[in-house]
Image: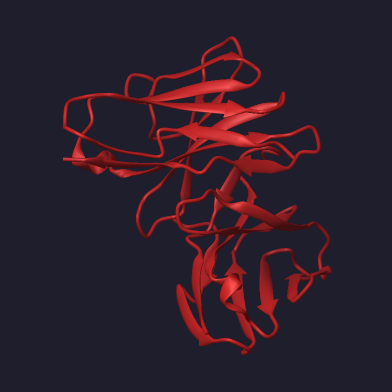
Length: 113
Length: 112
């Protein structure tokens, strides 16, 4: 099974700043995703990180706010830009392996003051 | 609109008790998955059910997929403190084979 390393594990940021979250998988995976988990809410898919091309965003999420990179098959970043307190959440990286199973990183707990 | 409704939202029981949590939808799903998430960790896949009426067992956990493929249940026998966590159900989003929609989860606490 794939192991996903995500960092930072948590951060406290000032409004108006940006934070980049990194996600490293220990093996090549077919697909990588970014989810948001807000308190009392379900996991919500932000976007699919496509290798070598622009990410595919879900409704309600835009590239200017959540730019995503995936330079190779095992690494991706998510940036939360121009943060506001409403962006306080857990952000989770996930990947689908060759057996079509979905694995998650440990998440990044973000608090915006 | 939440596609997958989970109940109860919270459940606190004593060690040794049995419990059932539910995942319901008005939509038909080709498959449903159950995950457990512990504090500070990401969700971990427990099982995938794909056939209406299917029952799968994982040690003390029994998963059932409804005949109409609109609902699923998770039954835990003789719960242990190690079963504590957030139980999430998930299904394919919008007909996609690789994007998932999740329920809000059931937060289970098993007290020693």
